[in-house]
Amino acid sequence: MFNLADLWEQIAREYPDADAVGDASHIRSWAEFDDRAARMASALGAAGIGHDDKVALYLYNGNEYLEAQYAAFKNRAVPCNVNYRYLVNELTYLLTNADAKAIFFDSTLIERVLEAAPQCTDLTTLIQVGGELTPEAQAAGVLEFEQLIANNEPAEPIARAADDLWFLYTGGTTGNPKAVMWPHSGMVAAMNTYYAALKLPMPQTVEEAMVAVRTNQSRNRTQRMLAAAPLMHGTSGITGLHTLALGGYIDCLGERNFDADELWSHVQERRLTFLTIVGDAFCRPMLEALDRAAAAGTPYELSSLYQVMSSGVIWSTELKQRMLEYRDCTLIDSLGSSEGVGFASNITKKEAAAELQTAKFSAGENTIVITDAGTRVEPGSGEIGKLALTGSIPLGYYKDQKKTDETFPEHFGKRWSIPGDYATIEADGTINLLGRGSVSINSGGEKIYPEEVEEAVKTHPDILDCNAVGVPDEKWGQAVVAVVQMTDGPSADDATIIEHVKNTIARYKAPKHLVRVDHFARSTNGKSDYKWAKKTAYEALGFEE
Image 1 (cartoon, rainbow, N blue to C red):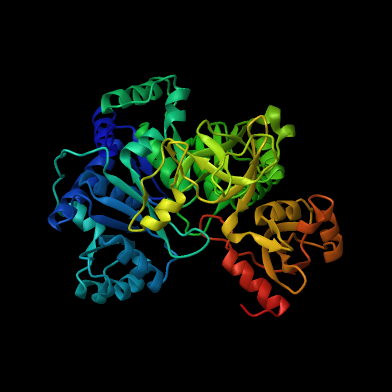
Image 2 (image 1 turned 120 degrees about the horizontal axis):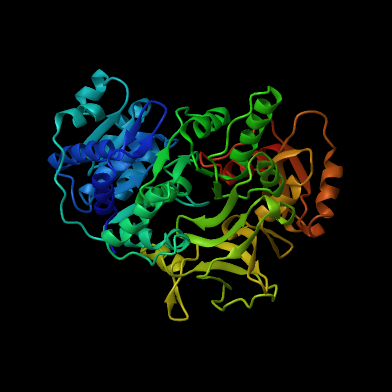
């Protein structure tokens, strides 16, 4: 295998004028992308940052995120994603856990960085993106991104290795963030479906990988991806690495809060072909924007779009069907995690829209279901187990051998990634996703999975969004509570909605109570915030955590 920076440098040499990265302010060619990353690599090298040094990216989506990541790769350093919503304590923990020597950060986050930096003993280099340096920043030795690029000559390519690392920090549902260690070789190997679609073997060298790049260029089928989901999360982060490895283009939105009209404007004006979103949290406002434009007689031009991929949360059948009414493209509902790519997927086009079923996926070729006892679930048996993936999986968690051993165990002579998603598997390989065991609800000895309850609740037409959590119950131990946001206008009463759910799933899984909220809290990548939902339910029902 090979290092991604080696491949990207070759793409820049062969296709210097092709689009590489773009945001609201600039579209940069591959030559520009490579040159700016090489200049930043020089700056990092001058600061003593090289092989295996950790470089934190505390940034919003934009060209600078991708340029800083590429610069780290050029020096054999390890980029580490940082959630831009992290406050000082969370930021300090992650930087310390990562042993980060450098941090790239957005100018609006300066106060948190200046407070956290003195507590991070390894941190030596602070680089601000955007804005003017404040006197406090200057006093702390903060460097300015564009100035570093202007003041440094491009670094010359160096010898690199396929086992150089990329860190993907995952918060999970419990505990502190953990860094999933992906080697470049593993990230390339996870692209097997891309190369298979081109009828090409898995490349072992840069020259072999360039065959795919040249094929796409010659067919005018280069992927033009819009990272609608944050690059700091795997949905866009991993897919972005793959897009660049195919010689493609990554586009970023300019607004800090998701703006569906901006998204469709970029698709229309920049002829984007591929979107990465996170389920209903993104798709619903996207459809509302399409509805508004159609009603105004100014529909968006979507003819370039051929794929929309969602990962991380359930993407409901209703919204998929509505999306296909606007654009006959391929919808990819991917079941993956920071710990593995390709557990399962649900891929459909318009002609199969009537057959769509929410939370049902086709198992990947390297996916099985394993019981808690470590035995393989027989397809069609109805037995519940955890999804397990072998093949191209990460090395484990950085500085957490115990958790690595738990999540990446050996079974049947192979190493597996088992993040904790419970499921059943049908005889035909269909995966029925139940949810993450760490947030499951135990009611009367029955294990109830929140995602299954949430999907049933959301089939009621008056429900806009839902999280299911457990609260104390004297009789059953825990009772299911649905924290819900209603659609606009009059809505059914609680009893009617609960009865609807009882007609959809087993009655014991239905919520005992509904807690209605005006605003629904989700994380930046659209995933459920179960801590918020639990706190909301406890407060509404008078329980103490």
